[in-house]
Length: 248
Ligand code: NDP
Image (cartoon, rainbow, N blue to C red):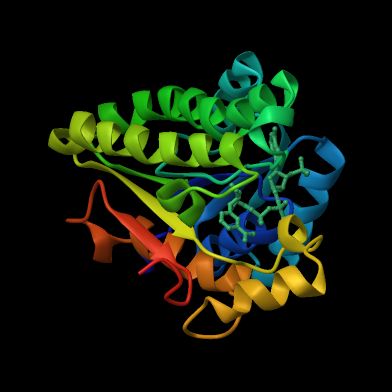
């Protein structure tokens, strides 16, 4: 029997890109999957497509990760539908780029709220059951920009670097209860988030990647699935870059 039979996974921001590929990867191995996006329509549409292609049970929930009450309701709803969450993937994220002197307060706040505070709300809500059950997996999606910074993305870099310190702290708090917390830090992945790159920006990015190609959402999803699997039972507080060698 698959190690995933009867296990529940929640992927935030599962309607597109890396989150959707991660939700599909868990569905493929037999987990029951909950995913969320900001609207019920997009979440249910993504959930139905994954359910149809994998035969797994996949539910879509509406939740704005920047809203702490909505996140509490999301976790409650998933637990009521499926039981305790075994693996939580905090993937939802946005960018609002701008050079620091021109950065608006609302762009700073929105990026910190969606990328960092949302992960905090969700970990706090889902960890209660994990700690009680003495088992669980948390995977937070950061970025190589959280490791190295990026001109024009100080808000995003701060949120993604914050996620790394946050996750290492959780790893230390939860280790004795057999709950692991790890980080996946993607490089340049082809999704809606990077689709606005100009051809020049794209070529410049590819030039810096030793493997000379952009990653796919599935490249990242495989790393997420690994860190959530039994094979990664003794790995916690780790940052796994998935970047074709870009950040080494
Ligand atoms: P996409 O823009 O393709 O997808 C973003 C996902 O997040 C969507 O499902 C969107 O759902 C959801 N989302 C955004 N804001 C919220 C919110 N406030 N509440 C709930 N859901 C939200 O992004 P990617 O797949 O490219 O990125 C996924 C993660 O990976 C992000 O955290 C990103 O920072 C990170 N990353 C991406 C890289 C890349 O090169 N693409 C590189 C490094 C890290 P909806 O719109 O339906 O609400």
